[in-house]
Length: 225
Image (cartoon, rainbow, N blue to C red):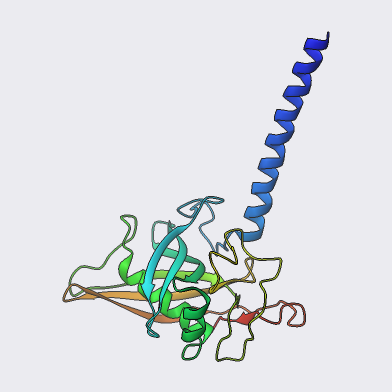
């Protein structure tokens, strides 16, 4: 009888642990999963709650950033990109230097253009030489937060408790991430290929409002057009 009781307890603990793990993953997905404006059956690559892709690009301020993103082919037509976070490779000091010359919005757009220019998965429709394709869409939360000062007047402050799962003050200081995950900006891009170079141009936007209370989130800045 004692042996059977021990086995039942073990099975209960294993089941309980699995339920907690699945519940944690569901909560994480609810918090950080990006908006899907349409084509709901077409999921992001990599899928949630796995790690996103990462790419290092150089902004016009001369600093290198690591961009976190996901992509998908939507409805067999759109080439979609979701921007999830940006971290300066040089940390807080590099981010602060860049914040002297670029706004948060400019950092996001520059990082977006660099990724679109350099990232070409097989699922997407790359233009041929001399051709332009206007089926790229980029999604990102309508409000973003830096953990460093920016010339737009956003002060530096200790990262609040609602940071994304990947944030580590020691390892990722000098970062930007969304304050809002459920309401997203939607930007449309055209990519042309000329002399083996990709030219990326934003040609339209569907803006959304940043609805967070500025008194509760003083470091959150609206970033939609």
